[in-house]
Length: 150
Image (tube, rainbow, N blue to C red):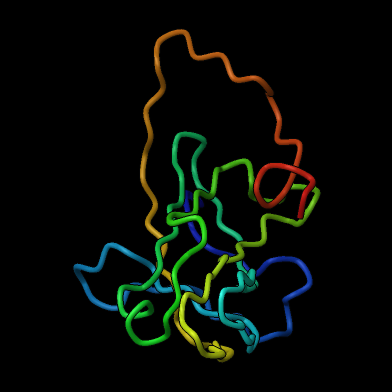
């Protein structure tokens, strides 16, 4: 029985997607790599494709964090600080649940992320609901960013 994990997102089946793994026995995060080489100009934000999607129980979320060495080595930050991948993002009709990492180049130089380079880490976790929780929508209406903007 499948509970949580990563899969190759639709359209990336033959692109050598790296399925995330923990680096050590006590690592909390699953290392996530770029699926293609990208250039990020100074002061620019680029969505870096991973070719991945994630499945999990309804009461879990996958949190995406930048690898700790990236700001010092590359001059990059995650544009949204922490990425939140909800369980209903998986297989959504807009983009199949493809995980993309928004990176901001705060340096004064062009930065290159190479295909296969580990850029982020994902941590699955449970979340809690408040009393009388009543979401605005029962089903996801969009893909990345929960809207049709991307």
